[in-house]
Image (cartoon, rainbow, N blue to C red; front, side, top):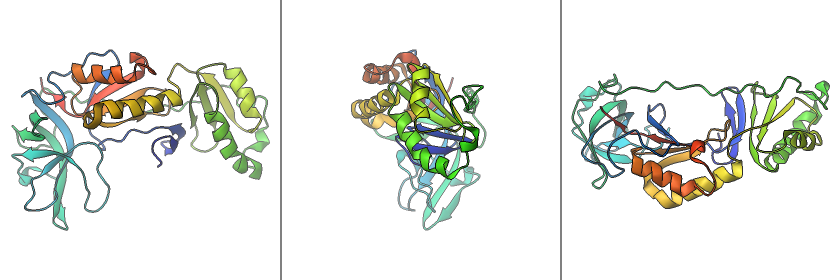
Length: 295
């Protein structure tokens, strides 16, 4: 999969989008673009109790274990960077394994986060179950539904699957990305049902794309941010917030900008909104905290 403004194939979709990098499978506390965080505390830690489902890794016997934040390299053994994890007993980690001197495993951690010291101190043993006081959000699958009922309008159904179609796909992708107010492109059947979202006149965009593509095509007007605005916002949020940001990008379907941070408190969420306000509205931003406040 190519990141940044690449083409992402999977889950029945092909999307021209920026994809967010985050710890795989880690549940999170979401803060929508209202600007008010749902967690107490601050980006530097306030002595409150937090939880997370994450990978833990000890790179060597004489090195302290780490709580992985951001991405985990899928090598064997894996690699990651994060907070020093204090109080870990590997016997509590059900799936722990060791290879080449590296020990790692996954589970729920509960403890105190100190951003200034870069530490997470466990107050409970690692568990495979979510701790009391933590509500795990259900992940809603992305929907890649067709955007129209007449995808061959102005085209040719026999074009799909032809040698000409294979050659024209790159032209279609380039032409779509060059549209004024282009939001995204995705494939609703995982192969050849191309759907394009734009901010402006969908009919004009459809006509432009028909000049290079005669096959299955739907074009519609969406409310999301343009790819150009998402790219500018992504650069700005990383420049202004630095290490507080673990990952960012669009999901390639709705033009919403997702930002992953350590703690999605009010101050950090507002800092994200301030950084991107030139390009995005608060409704187009979702800030997600990897560490979830425990109530």
